[in-house]
Length: 80
Picture (cartoon, helix red, strand yellow):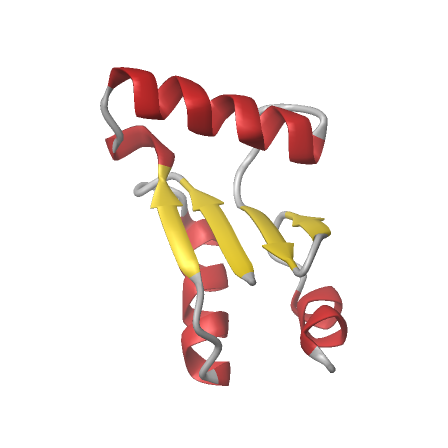
């Protein structure tokens, strides 16, 4: 399972989405800044729990958490 937490205005978040799209990786994406009140609070809480801070993008690949745009780490984490 691949889940991505982003902000709609973040250039590094867009690069992370492009990376996953180019690799053909199916993923769930949450643009946290576009969520409604309770959903936004819950998503921010998840980001803080995963990353230790409220930062974006946060990518979870089968339980491995990658904070920021890190193509090498993402490629490694996506390998079976």
